[in-house]
Image (cartoon, rainbow, N blue to C red; front, side):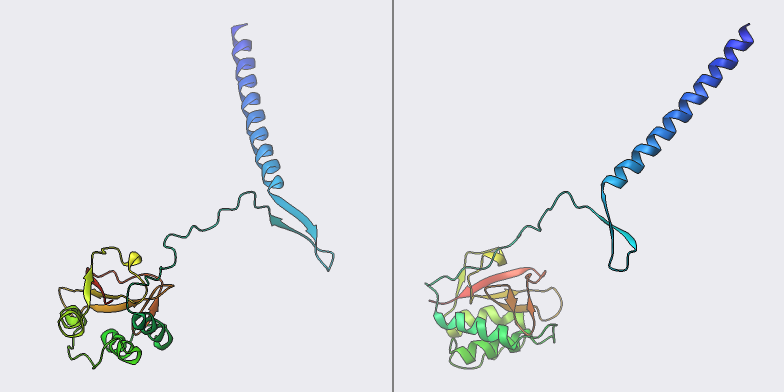
Length: 187
């Protein structure tokens, strides 16, 4: 008798396990069927589409820049000029394009002489009456301000804050990853 019990126990165990597996598989089929919308297209062919149950919009990480009316309006004009003249990709002439925008807007009275972008801060403060703002986050820089970035090697980078991002020889929604030397503007 003990042999029959152990065989029936094994049979019951195997049958129970098989029943469990089939119910799980059936549950997955039913669940996947619930997440599909089945329809017939114009040609009469049956097709399906996934049903989206949750919509999560992309959050605005950095909102548009604010205009600070205490700064020189010529700098806001320079931001517009820089954005209009900027390209989609860098031409490695950021300081040249920013100089041209500042000069065209009348924010500076002569073409700046420094060659490297990382030297722009000293020249803007010393020769053109700019002052350094106590801003360390490029996204908080007011529209029209000039952002100067350093580099251990190379010329650095300079760009103007626009309402929707940053512009130099190219436009970008995000600031340069280089270390920020400072944000400069004039009243």
